[in-house]
Image (cartoon, rainbow, N blue to C red; front, side):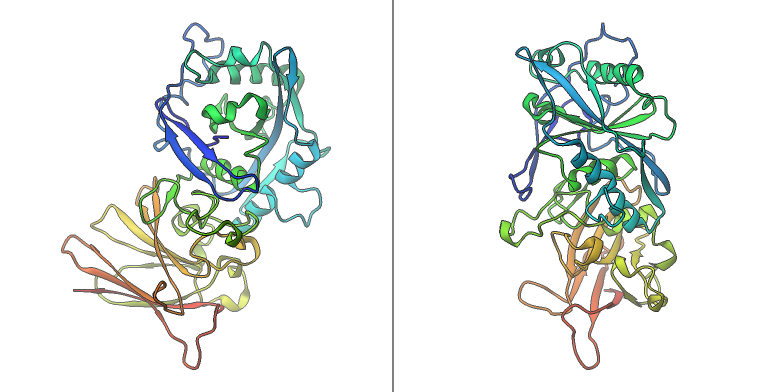
Length: 409
């Protein structure tokens, strides 16, 4: 079920419960074997040369993602095996059957980007392409259990060339490959990969859901993984680039769905809300501003309120980013720091980000309305971020938050 890793010395394993809740991702040792005698197309060499945590594609934040869906038929024990998912489900989960379908890849990209980055199908006839790979499943497994991805992708390319126009269609940028769960290719080494100018994302029946689709495509548009305060690579459960759910919460308390957007650092990188952003330079003074949730970005009445903020740290290798993580509309299934002001530490080169913590308008023994972050600069000064109260009341989930940021010490 792995769907992220591009590496030579590690494999990504995702343990997902049947209801899609409770993901535990970890790296286990393994080596990706490549048959050096098989070089018909010189495929996959650029993809297997780097570690999963280092691999990053150029940023794609506008235009159209042309997505084709391919089901792979393989032979095992003398019988054909193929994904058990219906073609209509595969198509609908990506592109939507009706225009108002909301739990789809197309809907989420369109909503989170406010039309800057959209998704289109390769056919108006809702076609799911199907390719028959030659040989048996065992032919694609090298000694030691690693998948021979060079052979796998080469044969997919060849079959697509012979049976469809997908590989030659310049409008197709991303190909989602659905492998049969019986062969467990996804459990061994699955990865998003770019080959022959196309980007491939491997999923199987068990890992097929909106979160995994958006996560894999997020990697392919140039976003890195996102961790939490404990520096876990996949620890961030607020957006798409971490984990599906917060494992510290009971399963029944988790949102039953995967509509969310990208965290504050990723959103700043994508630039979708740049005209309603604020960049704070605190070398000389304190700053105050109002911030509203991402789904309020284009509301006329929010013209004087920002959607995203960055605190510049000139002498540090990272900056801080903030967004109001309200769990509503197309962000309704965010799974951590719900309805709080999330503070994300992001590397200046955008190759990593970690959710530092969140602030809430109602402080309790567990939740604070202010925080002091160490090491604002090399002199050791602290950074204080505080939610300011409302004059007459503190609404449970206010339409916007009042934020004050200042340097102390």
